[in-house]
Amino acid sequence: MLGGGAGNDTYDVSLIAGFNVPVTVAPTASECSLASCDFDINSVCPQKYQVLAADGRAAVACRSACEVMKDEEGCCAYDVGKREVKCTRMAYKEMLKVKCPKAMVYADDGSDWFRCGHGSDYIVTFCPE
Image (cartoon, rainbow, N blue to C red; front, side, top):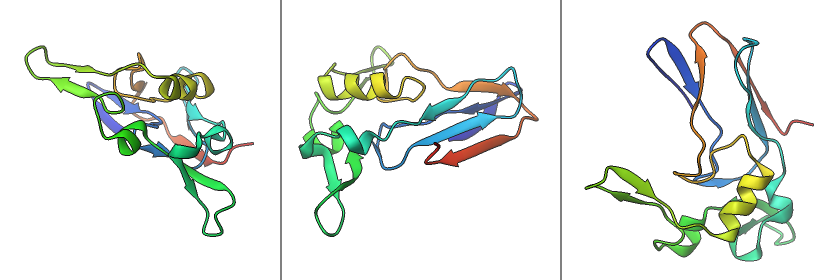
């Protein structure tokens, strides 16, 4: 996702809604950081989160905890009074964060959007080696 404000581009790689292929977002400006999930999460996706290929043999995507569980543990809740997002810690989300530390895994995982000055180009690579 790429957005902007205050003279900066903002960007991230997000697994909040699930995962299907590894990806990197690399700004061409040297002072800007790489956003990525270059690990194939499908290879370690727990069975209940897997989306299988048509032949049923291999995971081709990994669904989000919210999509699978449809409850407060899997989904993050927005506390209107405190104006903050609250997420329950769970092993699945923590595993994703370990495998993809430069990606946003759930709404309050401690990550923030990356920022880069306007004028940078970005190289988006799917399935990086």
